[in-house]
Image 1 (cartoon, rainbow, N blue to C red):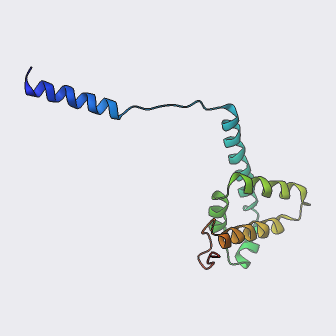
Image 2 (image 1 turned 90 degrees about the vertical axis):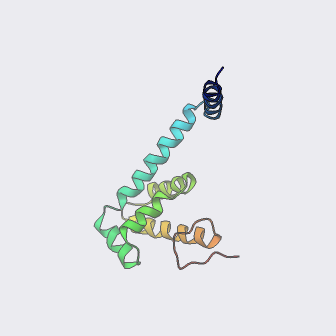
Image 3 (image 1 turned 120 degrees about the horizontal axis):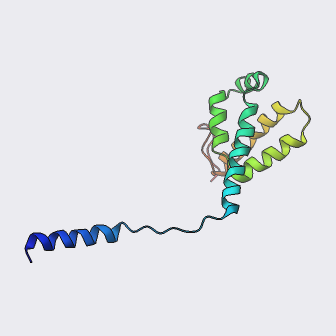
Length: 124
């Protein structure tokens, strides 16, 4: 067998052995949880379209784009808690909800879990 053929076979074996992929089952619970997370995120983001909410955010020194980014970085638990609070509030409580979100994110920054506000140093 020629050296070239041996090199091609050896190279092929190495390439194909390194490229193996394994797949795990993807349960319907995981799919539902992922879809619920996306739904919760969209529901919270839809409140940012309100002019009153945007004015309040600007008054607090947060641009609507920054608020969207912060909401996009929230975990499932944070979004669930926020959505449950918003669903229990009266219709006029949207501004309070946004303030609550900002306070929750500030507390998470203080704990060192997130790094959203650059001016907040985590507690050592």
